[in-house]
Length: 295
Image 1 (cartoon, rainbow, N blue to C red):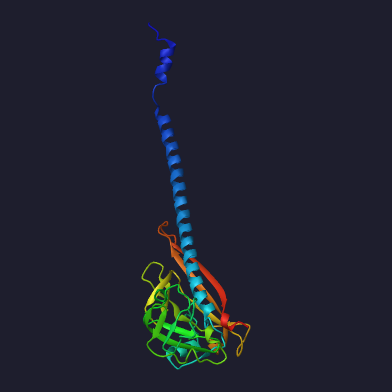
Image 2 (image 1 turned 90 degrees about the vertical axis):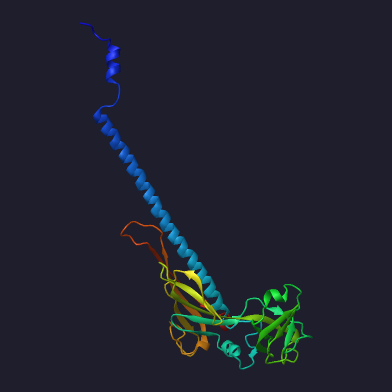
């Protein structure tokens, strides 16, 4: 009987996989694949959660900064807080009571952040000219803008009818003559746009439910920050009430010197496991002092 060489027999036995070996390899492959899928899903959930957190933080920052800016500036102008508001027009009435609101919304009135000096010699109740050559008056003021003209003694409001060069003409006369003021240097007169903003929340028609909105001077609502669920407002009344607490309905808005606001904010993650909430909810709260009423 012919015998095969030993090395040829070993070679034949080592060719290919056996069934058991193949099954073990498949199981190991499935384990590795499952681990990779688990890592991918974990990373996806982490990314979604971080994205939700980022959206909440961005919306919180926008909401806080814009509302807080208006609250701080309430009743403020480039002139003295002791400047007498002249006239009986709607703007004068609004500026005499620059803070209004409730537990769920607030309206603030103030001069714009930027004001511009006026040439005293050419100023009148019907038109004023800016001292500086830049910026161009037409880049700052437009026809139908409501503007505040003031010095340390008097404050008045008018509507812009036209802008030519650095001269701004009004459609109606100011309630005082800028060249004929008491207790103030005519050279101290300045002009700025009037700012009146109402802040509130309402439905936005999206997954987040509601957003923070602003209305400028009674105009259409403009969305500012997505996902703000509500606006909680309480007021600190320095005198005529309890000075140690914030209340939703102060007895006198004229004596409010600080406002506390609370805003629950929601972001909705784009993907999530079935049965798990897609919502990321956070709440920000802060207190803001009104500069013009600081003691």
